[in-house]
Length: 227
Image 1: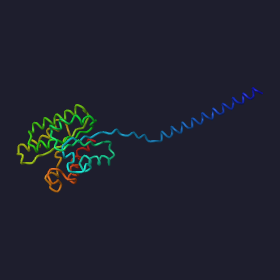
Image 2: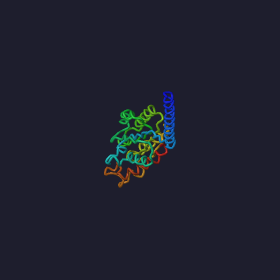
Image 3: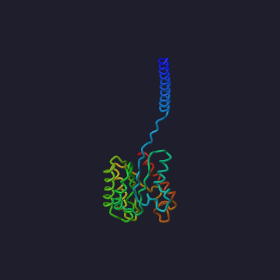
Image 4: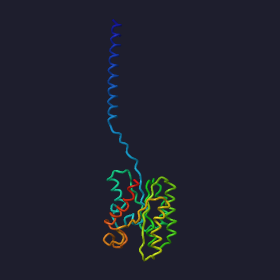
């Protein structure tokens, strides 16, 4: 009698164990099927674009959301591209000031570097040779820390009253630096804006919100191919 009971319990255990294994296998299969059916969505690593420049980049006289770097960010977001724009513009910044400030901004990773400096040097009539040295020093520091960063240089011009030779040397400085350092070049940041009263603020130097929309296009046409 005892043997029959033990045999019965043994058979029952085998049945329960078998059912449990089938259930576990079924659950495992469901999990695998669910995993297989899902599309693996791996978020792209966010990259940084540093705009390093003067009041033109800072958006002097405008709401921060109206400055061209912010408008570039809007364009990037609309295209769902994994880039974050960092506005490193500072009103009144010269190339010498930028050289002294760049290391601090390079503490955060830079994947795309847009250099917009030199305008204040030109307005002050500072020697073009010195501006070239300062800009080259900034470029060298960025390359040294982030050798894979893509580089863009924004060209500028000065009014003719600075003298024909000075104006020509200043204008040519940007394409020469871009070529030397294999940088993408924005020929003239203020193209279609500079000298147009309705697109500039009362000082005649800084663009209005409408003017910055045009600056955005001037930058985007060059920047988009690097992203």
